[in-house]
Image (cartoon, rainbow, N blue to C red; front, side, top):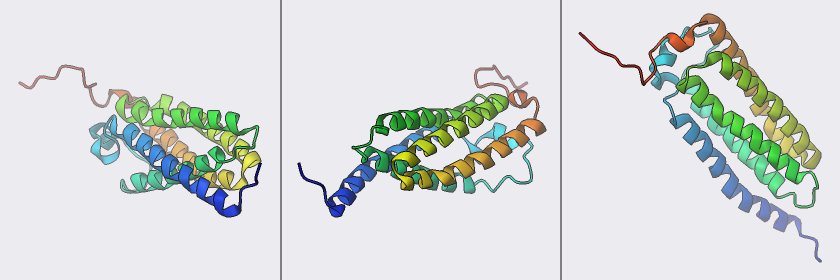
Length: 183
């Protein structure tokens, strides 16, 4: 049984990253495309937004960068084959990622601002637990989660303020299945 060299370990990490980064990006893209989001969403355009809301172009740029970091963190943990915490860390990552991917359809598609706020709180707790567990395996993987945690905090504040400014947000635009007639 040989010990792998640093070069071999780096190469193994890169092989995983070539898979995990595009996979996480694809999942994020697919979640965001289930329903129009941001400025492409008529309902979202009608909402009153807090002054801290960044321009629309910031969201896809931020999420792309965050998904790349998450993919790299995931690759680091997948590559940590000797850790007994690897399995639980990967499972927790999967749960927080599923919750993350559910937020966009819940908010933009179903117009459930309050439920999306609760979900983002749960995502933050799950992501924090994931980062802590990642840190016990590979500190670098935990550090790659820090920008994501910061963005989740910021997004949670925005979600909260939108909820406060729009108490009946789900009624702003009729649902897609509601009949609409013009006379």
